[in-house]
Image 1: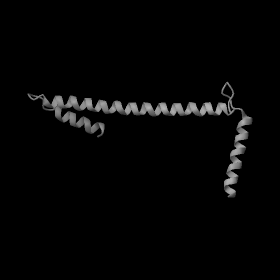
Image 2 (image 1 turned 180 degrees about the vertical axis):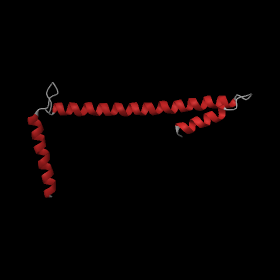
Image 3 (image 1 turned 120 degrees about the vertical axis):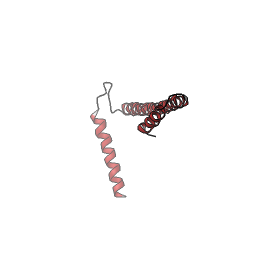
Length: 97
């Protein structure tokens, strides 16, 4: 349900609150349920961001261990050229097959 549909339902119930407070109670319960759903979505996004951050750190550490970076995180061009040559050779071998 979109936010505007949700708001329309809440507004419709709120229009007539003369003697019956039950629509107000339903509104509060629906709003609390909606907040729980939004909290779950935010937790999911937080987990995805954490996973992406962890993956980036892992790749960075692997590249450092392979010798692509020095301690100041500058590229070592010899290693980059070497791996580029390896990748090109692999590509050529696949095209030959």
